[in-house]
Length: 110
Image 1 (cartoon, rainbow, N blue to C red):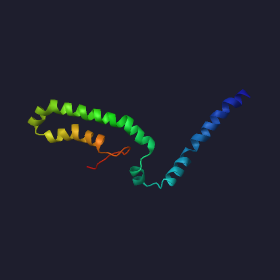
Image 2 (image 1 turned 45 degrees about the vertical axis):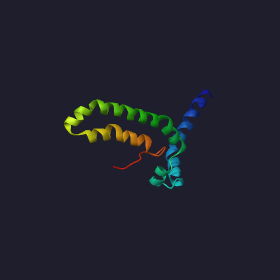
Image 3 (image 1 turned 180 degrees about the horizontal axis):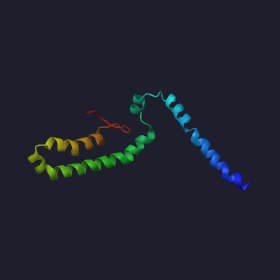
Image 4 (image 1 turned 135 degrees about the vertical axis):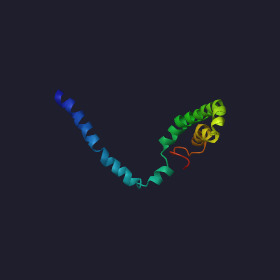
């Protein structure tokens, strides 16, 4: 009997893990398996994670990038790449923080 108690959970776990690909194919079929549908309609958990985790980090990254941009501005001006430095340090994080839709992967195309 004790051997059955230790074997039964292992068998149930193995059966559950072996059914994961089948469950994924059913989920893809029910969602229409259209990547644009999933990009246009993000799930609630991705919106919550975006709101509570990603947006504050992106806003902090934008502020930090602005500070780094101001400090390195003389060197960027001497090198002639002020626009590139501004885009990389301030514009791109700011665009991701404030323009991107809630829960979406990216808000713009290059």
